[in-house]
Length: 238
Image 1 (spheres, one colour):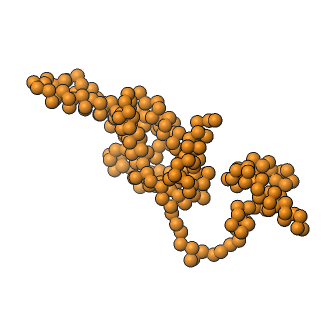
Image 2 (image 1 turned 60 degrees about the vertical axis):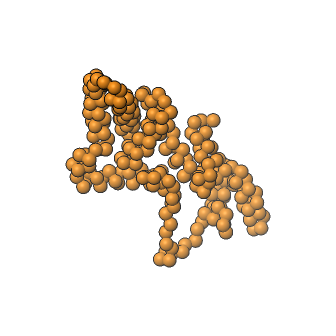
Image 3 (image 1 turned 180 degrees about the horizontal axis):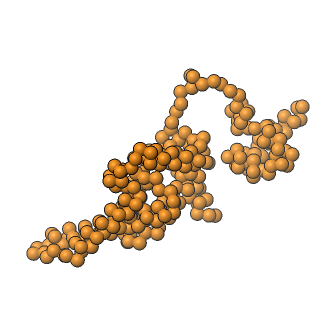
């Protein structure tokens, strides 16, 4: 079983995701794998506390900026590494300052200054600083929004369950239907997911069972059920 399948299987077993479709769960599994890959390849995390801090930074930065390319993800990994190192240096200096007759650890202070400068440079590359946001033109901002919207659509089309970029919790978007025109839906028979044209293709062996299951987003067992108990019975009645 691949890592993706393992993560997908784990998500399916979580209570908070029980109402999501297979496609929605696949999107979440892909996002989790990408996050885990970044956290796994960090250099400076040596404790559970630091790994937890790194995970918090990752969620924060992903919510603040569109990070899609491999280069941006590598830069983000470097930034989180430096942030973890900065936090470790701060804790060291805090302990030193509390000692009686403590001397200023100039080497560590200089290391902190250099690390802060590097972190700022990396943030600027990722568009995470206020300076970057102020200098961006409305056109650049609009193009970035369109890029993010297109990516989100490709991954979530047909999905009305979304994730809050601030709290990371899932919620549903509901649409009022009083002004919509009713049209016959060819993907259902009564309340059962069912499409006769697709089943005709399967019956004629122009589609495999696996292909039909993938198109409908269901299991192979489901295809067996609707084919044997609905489709074949309809053919017999003709």
